[in-house]
Amino acid sequence: MMNRLPLFIIITMTSILSFGSCKTDDSTRTKFPWIPSIAAPRHYPVQIKYAFVDFGTKNKRIPVYESSVGGGIGQPGSEVDYVDFNEKGGRDMPTAVHLLWLSYAERKFYQLDAELSENTKEKMLEMFRKPYYISIEKKHYRYSNLIITMLPGGKVWLHLNGIGRTAIVCDTLQAKEVHMELEDFDKDAFYTFKTLDNSCKLLLSDFEGAADNLEKHGVPLGLWDKYEEWYRYTLKIEFENKETKINPHILSYFTNGDLYWDDDSITKEIQTSTKYLSFNWQVKDTIYNGHFYFDEDEILRVYPEAFGNEGKLKGELVVQVSKYNNWFDIFLQVGDKKYKLEKTKIHVFRDTPQKKDDDEPFYCNYWDSDVEEYIGE
Image 1: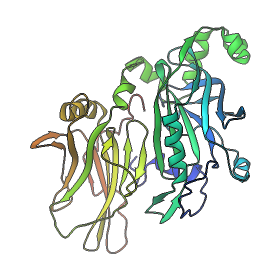
Image 2 (image 1 turned 180 degrees about the vertical axis):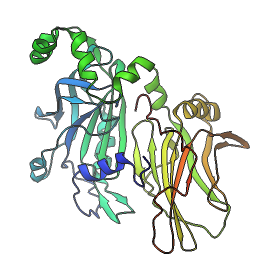
Image 3 (image 1 turned 180 degrees about the horizontal axis):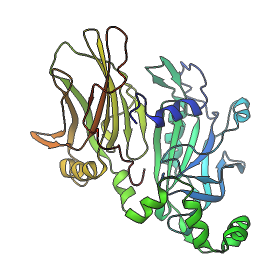
């Protein structure tokens, strides 16, 4: 199904509370309204026994009430109690994370008790203090959600999330594997399924595509290391028709869960691999809405080839649009070398001057196939 606005954006834009227009930089403020949430990859869901976040300096702690999650990296999975947002002054910064969870795909338990580094806390405070601007909404918003993503192998990533924006703040936390009986972890699961294997197998099937993905790909532990690799590049969009006007509201989604609408306040010189891109452009009275889905295998191979395994080289992700808006060249440019991204799936909708939206895409290069989810997204 070809949507004009991707599902993950709809989720992000509607599930997080807006705090209205914020025009000031609260440079001395130390408390902000925020809540914790948990997440896990779509095909590698988890169940928690507990999840707590410490904050402030007086042993304050806030729990996460969600149990099983698998909505995607950096995608909040727990329900939000908005009553907490009415607390005067909000909460102090997060200081520690405590987790105990079961990975269904691995059939393993992991435990994390981690103090957050000063660098992580300072980074979060800086981000909370400075509202970000969503140009398509013409409003300023604040981050309002600390998302804890549990990955196979015990990796834990932390993101800050708000309307139209998700940004990773820590990707270095590592839980330890622990051994325990299913009955001690979840008595209901023990009484229902009797064994850990039965429990994980049946509960995994509750998440669409997870069991098939596990059978096909297993648990590729090194995959998330590739997702979090940083590269020095910026986006460049070129049009053969020089009369074309591009809409500045460009949407980018990255392999590490980062997400943003283009904005001058975002540092774009160092990013992980671009997973999805969407933008509009106008030729006279006709508006085109393009969606670009990058192929997982291709970007994980081409990015390190172009920028070097350590990501030190600088370059550009270039999208060239033909004169008639029905052909695209996409490549990484590093110096005078071009690295083609030929497996990108593209569809473009067109809005005509008569204000009649086409029911079918004006252009599509994958009529006989679907956009595949990333293995570990």
